[in-house]
Amino acid sequence: MTAENPPPARAAVAYADRAHRRWWNLAACALLLRFLIMPYGGFPVDIGTFRAWAVGLAEKGPAAFYGAGFADYLPGYLYVLWVIGEINQVVRLSDQAFVFALKLPAAICDVTAAWVVFALARRMGSGWALPLSASYLFNPGIVFNSAYWGQADAVGALFALSGVALLGVASPLLPAVLLTVAALIKPQTAPAMIPAGLYLVRTLARPVHGPPRWDLLMGAAAVAAAALVLIILPFGLSPLGLIGVLRVSLGVYPYSSVVAFNFWGAAQGFWVGDGVRWLGVPLYLLGTTAAAAALVVVAVGALRRPTLRGAVLACSVALLATFVFPTRIHERYLLPAIPFFAAAAAADRRMVGVYAVLSVVFASNLLFAYTRPYVQTFALPTWLESTVFSTVGTRALSVAAVLAFLAALWILFTQAREPST
Image (tube, rainbow, N blue to C red):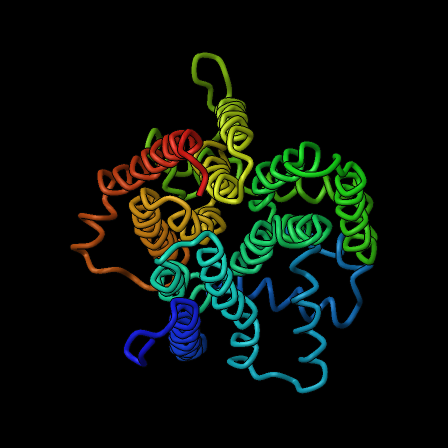
């Protein structure tokens, strides 16, 4: 054995080391890019609301939060704002520093989620782990949402992705907790619980080796419930109170599409009340029924293939379904699906095209929503407004999201018939 022809095991280790070093270099560049952007921008209403909540939590504590003013967030992300508020109490952040601090958690979660994509892709044996992770690190929509807009969707997405990534390698208790926390940060991540839960049921109730582990299944359900109670309790909420907060959140924008490039954006455009009836049925009921039916179909696909690959694919499709079909959906609600599709591309290469299309749709949707005249941010060039963001352009992008869902669903079911790898 010569130095030019090292043993295969040693070569594999050397390749892994190089891949890790390259990832860290890319991650440092991605974080620096975000740091350069973060002092600027910031959606005025969102930044102002987050700042007021952070200051209020630090001054009055969580028990006085709900009922003291407008609040349409569940308690999960409020803990992050509470910490920022406490830091401000000590060091008295300047206005620009406060904006930077509000954006920092999401920026860190962007980079961490890219690491999870990298690790998950390597676990599934993909040779595309580094490029897929890099595509998420520098995904224009992801960077814009966290570093410029200042929104927190990346935090919930990280918890959900981490919960699914730990399936099969950690006690099921940990994924159960992570997925519960994700849903309490951003309810849009909750659909990932369905394929993840079905994976646990199939692998623990019908294991390949050994007796069924009903104790672990019951334990996962119990720790998820306990995590929920422990998170909401300091805010003076009961489970029924939590449902009340969720209802408030859902009731803020009763429109079929709140500037989301989805089915309703394709069919009707934006800001159309979802109480309007089609064939005598209100749009909100049609949307809810279509989303529920889509999730049932995804669950069938997940049950047919109780593997990690199948769970990742099913989670990505489930998250996309609940962006495409329900009413009252915002443009940012697509974000939790994006890292899952990056990982899904490692599970099945056909998902690369879907991931690319959704990345374009997401970035375009964010830019469109951020620059509407009524939000008073900045204006886009006339040529862009008259082409990409014209009525025809936005309808076409909305149709692309629907077609991406259909393609992803087809891949989920055709992949389920392939031999596991």
